[in-house]
Length: 123
Image 1 (cartoon, rainbow, N blue to C red):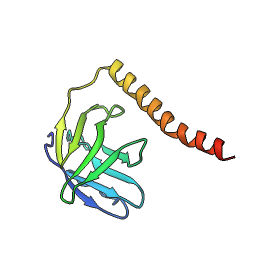
Image 2: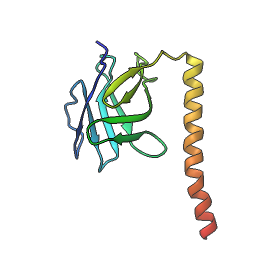
Image 3: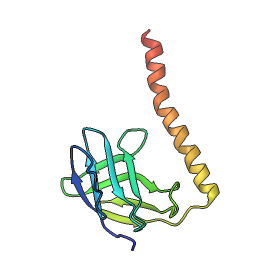
């Protein structure tokens, strides 16, 4: 059954047993893990890094940006986690998924390119 909310739990290590409805967040390992919000039971891992996902904690709730697109899972669910709420998005077509993946690669390359350029100027 599709979730409409998710609880969060800050942990040092992601537990072996991932419970449905909980977003586990490990700051030391810059990662978060949860079971897919569609109810399929698949485990979803989101790296918390500038070129991947951003975590916002307001002291009470968490938000993850950008959206969670589970394109590699059979369900291909797509949602935002915003202030512990699951905001469901429409399913993407194959061409939208392909374009989104291409955009993600370009954004990561652009992010890391600035570090390459910084290292070249300091040599």
